[in-house]
Image (tube, rainbow, N blue to C red; front, side, top):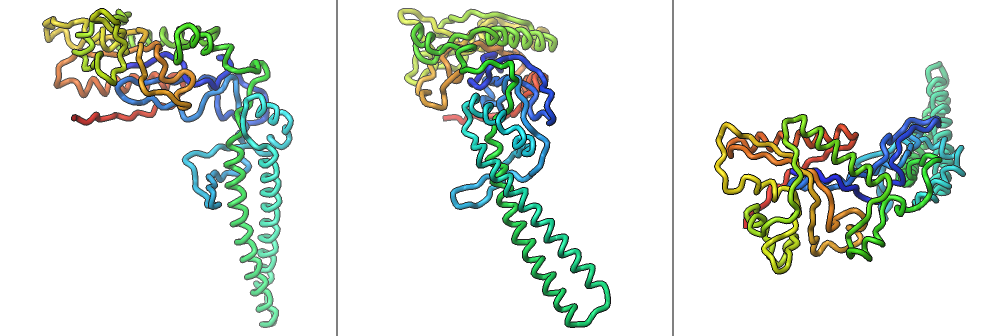
Length: 378
């Protein structure tokens, strides 16, 4: 079970954290987009919301609905809604517009402010009609001629229908406003440099040196990777795991014994031509071979290892826009947890590994979404 330390995506600009003294609650308080891949458990989805560099988002709610509009103008409720301070956005239009430009966002600020104005006016009209309806209801409590009462009944009925129609329009506009506004990126701290990913990564130079899907880490990205590796090793060692660094070239027979096919047509393994050796795709392989052909005393079990290594994978057939950046690269760093135990204890130790991974994610303030994949036979 592995926890790669490689950074994912290319959405953050710096690694510093801070708060911004502006009048709204923070929606996001951390800054890094970490593409933490859990080997063997297919938990390789990026966190649902990228943590942006020293960023804060307006969050005090003025409007709470949050649907998605499709081409047929039908409203579909999304799984998540942002609490957005539209008044703050309106009052700080220039700042928000500049942030949208600097973050290369496609948010339509003019449309958002127009929708907000329409929603606000419609809310006022709904409140006005409700007030008139309350006045009519109060008048009907007193004594009056039947004709006068009938007139008030009709007036109240018309006001009720008017309120219902306006409320439908209000809900539709509110939904549209919410969906458009959720395209606005988090506000970036003024000290964050404006620019692309060149400050932290260099894909172009790596492509010249090594080919596509390689990269250089630079500046804070290097320090972050080293820190993540060291922190992860330290945390897992507290759970009784022995730390290892491993060979990154192993014999093909060891790869095969771990269930991989180094010479297969669809292999993800780099084989060294003219030898019986391969580059490892995960530290699981050399750790799995550490006690190869040995007989272990039952009293020694379980053996718990946490290993750091570089990993190499061909990623055959992985080309496409969805694999740009630090995703499905040919080389990355990973921390792997590995337990040797009795077969009947396998399930319980598997749950232990999952629990450790969840604790690590939680400690970083990241959402942990676990999916166990049962691989079919045949």
